[in-house]
View 1 (tube, chains in turn green, red):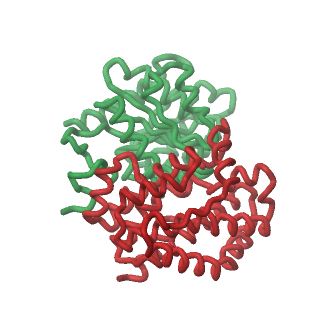
View 2: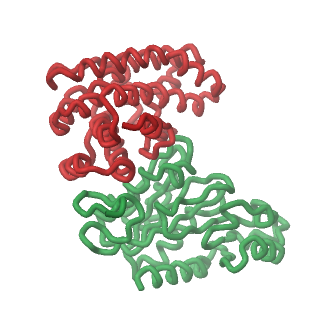
View 3: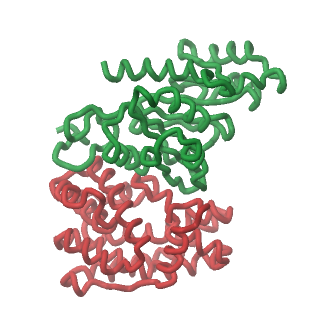
Length: 225
Length: 220
């Protein structure tokens, strides 16, 4: 018997692809990145873009409030039973990487309560450039930075910028006002990430999240293939 | 049995959800009852000899072979605060996931089936210790340590207390941890109804208040 694949208990251990009833679980995508880069706005825009065709739920990891969960609720991007907030004990990166138990519990509860789900978005609390998601929690991760945080962030690299499955560089509409050079950011990102994709977004228009939504659809297609 | 298994289980990095909980330290800091290393030591000592002793005996009872479901009821009866009962079951569910990945066994599977939303954390911890080949006193040591290390770690974050001072508090408590673990293991030899029921009413009261805070760093 492979560890974590007992079939007579109430819960899979972590990243098992099938649920106990034999159905395939939802694809889980993590969104991380520094404070204020637009993670919650990206989650909201993705929900609006994808919710008509996909069954979606969201887990938020607020650092000390329910602010992110409340933002999603107040903007009515999903019904409240599809949004769960996890408390992280002042250490948001621990909850998505070193000890993922509370997040796994939230993911399982959502599948039990409103499933079957196609997609669960797990949003981390705003943290530093080294925060990445455990593979036991998510199948793929998006790292969100923005042009106003400094156009040298892609050059500086770090695990989020370098290894995330998708790097989103958000708020491109602000570039002229903060003196950020988008071409330089694209070149630096390419240097750090090789063939891994980068999406430039501006969420001031409804279609702004398009490149990210397309990437998510591609991930789903290979998950369900 | 492997003594090192105890180190793995007692390690603060054991991924069972404990990092998000302060063991009552967050409200105690807010009310000024923990301000520095000395008041942290007093808080830890109080928690150790009350809630800690009770939990340690429950944990030691599982390796003695007492029925986990009866122990779960005994834990309920010894936890008057609904918020702390919910926390204990949440942490028990998270401990169960880690336990079934680290030391899988039929006893853990059976308890997971019987309590899919989580049994009390000390009951799960006791079964985990048994599954890891540890004895009652080892199991009691584990919970005694976690009773004081949780608040100490939380206070380092909440007060920016010097981490050396916080760790020194734990080191000085070590002989008391030994005594509580020994007493708990001894108490766990008795019938379930005779298990200790020491409690800290102020921890129960502040846990209820803390659960209703709109803004907090720790889940409990």
